Image (cartoon, rainbow, N blue to C red; front, side):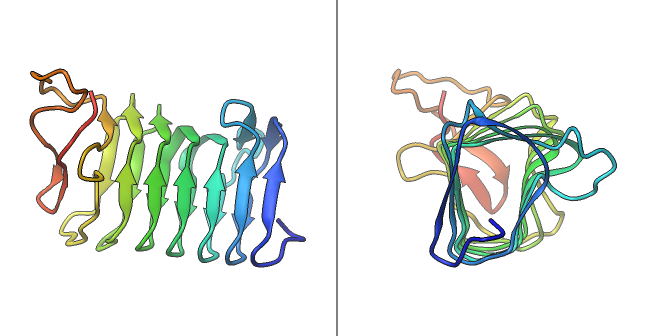
Length: 193
């Protein structure tokens, strides 16, 4: 990433990388070989208060990683808008993914074994969050109190899987019959079963 220029595609081979990464350049695509075999692990960076991956560049696309082992802080922290996190595993962190910026897409991720699966800061809005699996988090989603931000939690047909969702699927289409309410402004109308 240090040598990358805006518009570059950074491909990362399978392996376990013990580090924290700061993505401070705009318009980068960072693609791991496979989310099950391309692992960024903060475990060896004891005492660090930074996220496993901190994104401050705009229009960053991140896909194909396991991001893990930062129990005191964030797996992925997004500080700049128009960021896409897709097809990754985010696990064993204080907060799996922390959103500070509008207009981001969080899709097709497994977000689990975190204290907070997804943290959304006050008034963050216009983010698209669906086809994710939220499970075994103490809190699947945490939003700051008195937040007015509205985000999209489904694509009109399918939303997210929630381990704390307790409704049923009477017609067997794989979609829960009752919406999953995150807060009064944020509702997954089509939770996955």
